[in-house]
Length: 112
Length: 114
Image 1: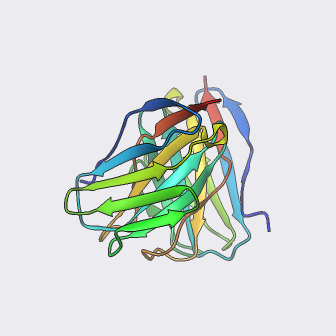
Image 2 (image 1 turned 45 degrees about the horizontal axis):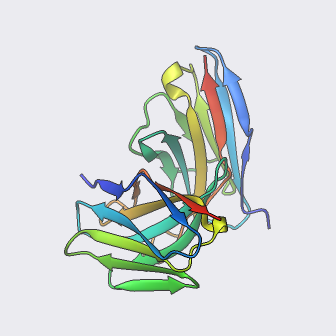
């Protein structure tokens, strides 16, 4: 059974710092892995989707990598800003099920 | 283009009461999903639909029923609410279930069962 873990659960950094959020999954047979952002009281917004055949995806200051063999994905945020404060969730689409398994998220706070 | 909308945004129920949550999407998506989000548990799939008139069970289906009578709407019903169903409920939709397609989420419904 696929399990997705995100560590740390919470993170505070000063503005301008580069940071890395971690996501690990137990079953490497995935179709894709997605990173989402969730603001308090809001729904989820897709940030980056990495297909199983890809190693990384980039969007602006965000870069997500995928290493299926080690069961890990990272979300790199460059030059963090207070507006980046939110909860970041990763989700793995497991082969054969077409259902996303979500991690519990990392709550990020960027201090001005 | 409103995307995915959910009704209501908040609701308080007493144990044993029933209610229906409505999800609507205007993107002509085939696939729709209902999740619940609980502290420390992440999002868990309750039921999903791969097209009009079809539904299937997800990870935590007990105590819930769903219907997809129209392509744009996906209803989640609680026949006899229990305190364990206190949660935030999210609806999502996607055009396909392929590896390249993302899911679009609604803003959520916060449900409290007393």
